[in-house]
Every structure is written in structure tokens, then in C-alpha cells.
Length: 115
Image 1 (cartoon, one colour):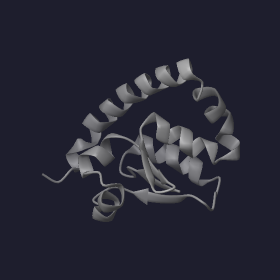
Image 2: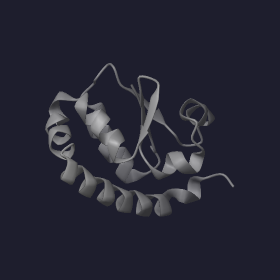
Image 3: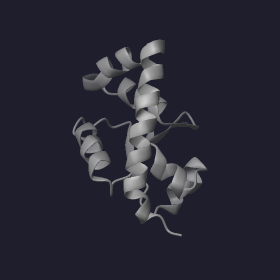
Image 4: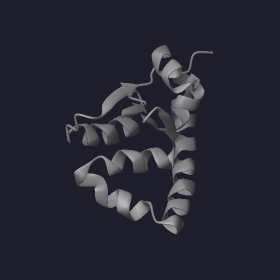
């Protein structure tokens, strides 16, 4: 599995750094900052990549809140998050909340986009 994240966002980096400490060998961490290869692999433009977390698992690109579920499912320490947030009503609330937070992080970080 590959996880595409914004390493230049302090909040994003802090969270991903926690996950990296788990040293899950099946996870490749990919910084999307000025990364044309990430755009090719995900078939997402830099704006789309900056806007949400993405993962590729089994050749499928997953973004947003669902990407977090996919990630947490692979991490024993965080599997409780997967088990809780996958519940239908909880996932709907989580997705809504994630989109709000992701939007404001995007606004904060969009200056890094090339015009």
C-alpha cells in the first residue's frame, strides 16, 4: 500500500510521523509536494492530492476519510480507529468532519501549488 500525504503541511506531517513510527513494512509513504510521479500513480492532479489524503491499495486509489480507514486497518495500534470509524453513522460524520478540516488545511497550504 502507498500513502500519499503532504509532508510540507505541519499538521499532516505530525500525524503521518506518528503512523511512520509503527514501521509497517507494507506501507510506502509518498510526499506529494511537487511530486509529478505521485500525480501519475494516482491519476490525481496536484490540487486533488493536496486536498485529501490518498492511498493506493490493490491498484485502487482511495481518498479522504476512506483512505484513513484503509490505513488504520493495516496498523495494529490504530485498528481500533478503523473499527470505530467504519460504523455507517460514525463514518458519515467522520467523512463530513474530515472534509471540513481538509478544506481548511488545503486553504492553508495551497500556496505550495505551482500555477
